Length: 341
Image 1: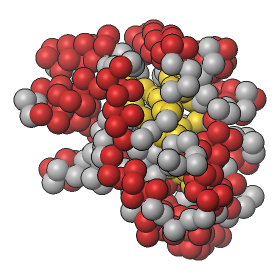
Image 2: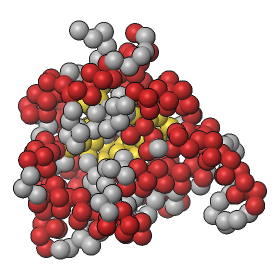
Image 3: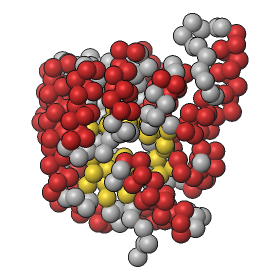
Image 4: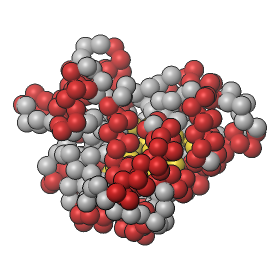
């Protein structure tokens, strides 16, 4: 028996009401976002076994989910609203759906306090309402905030969204920046090659989003803000040297009006304000590299349930070349600290 709890920190759900709404949007053709049509057009329309299984698990916050956790050796899930969440809806429906999702998730966490923790869903379409929902989510006992990356092609570095950062920092609650399919302005070449979602497009889109946040000076304005990203940092840890070099050169040259000086190097913010999880990336060389370049206290375990439910990957990470103290921190302690579990 392991001498640590396995806490999986990027685990998805969707209320049945939201899944039904997505189905109607697809059937009626009322959403023209090509990423949404590609992603959930597959999961909600395909007759294949895997998408049907994934959809059934997304909607479950009870016995099916717990049975899968037990089979894989997962002690606790940190659960969040799956992409694109509310962020493909109009403002009013998005605000209402965030409220519904948070109420359902908080109730599930109350029913299963030893197995589930949750993150607050918001509607960035209404930044003021999103900030209020972050505070309400804390009152519900939720442990952070989920943002499914871009909202209609808009990114959180736009100052109109900064009330979200202000609320998260003031409440000392982390934001999990989860992937979304790339927006219309980016997705074309990926979509035609079948590379628009988890295989590649998610990482490109979300890595871009985090870089925009860093280079816009968000962490200078909100120095205590904490952001978590999955999939070992969406490839950014492998670019640290080049990011620092080219950012400094670009700022010095004054090439772009949008790129102003920031107080530290991009890599410094990745080491001080950002944590990464291993969701979907159960590969020891990459995990150990991220621990080396970001710091061992910056890398924590995640599965990516139900999209990548692979119990063998749990065993693979149990076998990482870490001592007992480091392994307990990786699976349990860092998550407890970041999410206040």
